[in-house]
Image 1 (tube, rainbow, N blue to C red):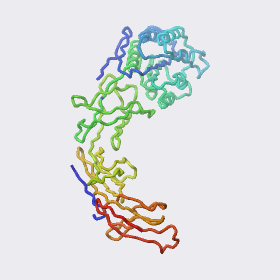
Image 2: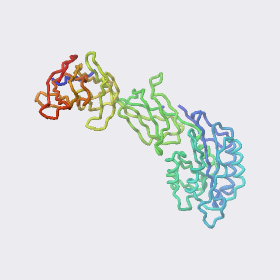
Image 3: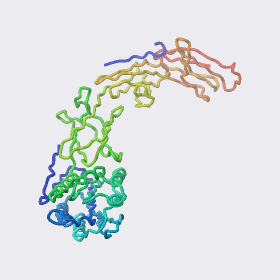
Image 4: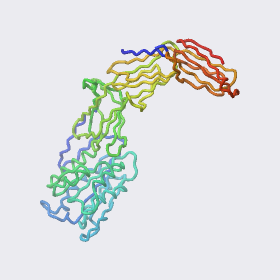
Length: 465
């Protein structure tokens, strides 16, 4: 244990597979919060270009058939709602109609019936118009009814890029910042448009029919399954020994709080596993003093993710010798900083990151200790002497102040007495003091009176003027 003595006045495994064929039922594990509702909005391209040939048939006929088969697998998935928005299906091209988009099947608690509605709507689609992707994403803002416990997901199925003046990247970012939707999934039919959609969301290339099936299954698997992680809180040796600290996961785009965990080590002494939504990019704040932040954390689906943060800590204890320990606040700042980091009370012990700190003990008079060192797994102890007691008495109300008198004779203001009080009691650190006072009824400065005295540890001194 390291001591500093002060004499004042005198001196986070779930692994899951996601490469299925559409003939199989989509595997959905039950990892996510059991109260969380997953809402998936499919934005489906019915623009004129979907009439083009693609392998065995037209793009529209193939995607219709495959999508309907895969939607059938989702009818009985718990805590799932699906909706359908279509663009390019109302106005014939040309001319270019950049507002041709419509929510055809809104969300409903009866997901089985809703999927039937979506299937029927898709069956009767006839490709006609333009490709207003950005405008469709912007309109999707209203497609998700308010919900405090929902994951809102968009799957965009398209065979082309934006044809109007909109910016799909800005539209996607707006949705994410507002917390309306997670990062969209994009399935590109026929050609590789990844360069145009990297900024919009996670792109899947479906150049072939089977690619479309695999892409849709991967998207659904990622959308409905969580993944696992462990947070390694590292000491100075790089070992994950730090624990019992609050951790907050924020959505990197919106800044909203997603998870709060109190870190723990399991029975084997290794960091416990936590469940995370793989659709987000996270900022992690470990609530040490001061907090440590790690930004832009990408969680890989199908893997057990390791998130490492260096947080070596030591202890700071501030105490008063003797039995007269009062509830004195102590202000802690990072060395050479004006910002208050923490307020710790006398006779408390608190953890801090290793480093240098400025400590200000709000005793009378105040004690300021610059660059106090906190070392890993050690307790730095600051001990101040037992206070004494000053009883200040005056016969009439007045204007008075208490000063600390230094060895060089310099006076420093310690306290201003209450104007309307005749008696006050103060706890003072040992040292030399002077009281200066004038009666409020005497208007002459020459009526000022003063008295010098000393305080010893545990001593009570009465000063009368």
